[in-house]
Image: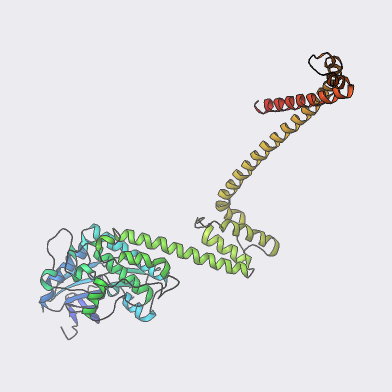
Length: 451
């Protein structure tokens, strides 16, 4: 079909918006005055692609997802007999168009597109459908919505997971070579992991602005089969470290080494994106603090951490209280910022934690004070007992030494005479008294501690 027709079926052709080997896509408008909507009209170019054309109609008709293209109408032109189907018209172009204009996407832009497309593929897989041709050309961007609504299209190469019909057995390798999984190059059994591989390639391209493998068809085949997946960190230092390992796993050579599902791949991306966002937000707040812009720092901390309930940063609490203190002494709180209400969700768990620590500290102090008090009482008691024992011991020493010592038989006269001296008896029995005091003191204190 070389010349642009004016009419096809009930549609007026406005302009050509795309052309491939099997079909041409026109921007068209319904001639029905009750429904004069614009549509993307896909028209078969030749009879060779009829089976693929028919498969796409059947597949899209059975899928109902906001991120999968919708078909409104199917039929044949009465004059030419050419088959066509009318799809929703997405005016924002393709992801390929956006990459050609912007070179690459930011992490936030890429995630805004990949998450819905991942959800669309997950839904298709649950319906038993493998897309087999996921790439930047087949992702349309609905810029009429905010955020942009990505739409997965071109289901002409789909394969049913429950049907034995596989068009690769008759037409060989088809699709977009840069996104081909190893099992496609080897013409092996395809699974949802095949779409996962292509989605990982698409994300790599969106983030870096280039495809991971380059070359002609033969070089591409060798690289997809044997060459390690390239590093994203070297191309995008700010984003690469967060996504690199995830992409490497999603684009593993063996399907069994990839994520079990597209949903788990997207979940890993979401977690990595959250970590990257938190790290960047925290760095931004630290810079604000360094420049003593405490009000803005407190506002950012409230917006990026407290309101979203993210308390995983251990030093967020420290920074929070530091900023509140700084505002009290060096500046005002942000305009319209209710510190008491905004901080409540964040401060309550911290306050509870502080209360627990204070309680534990108070209990410890009470225990120490109690032990110290008992020790003081023990010392007082010991002193009182000593005041009684020492005089008694001295008195007994004098008494016993003067009476008993001279009467001990077997002692030489010199020793008896020495012991009979009062000062000798005093010295001897003072030692005995000291021993008794020590004994009673140890016994009494140990008894108190065991109470």
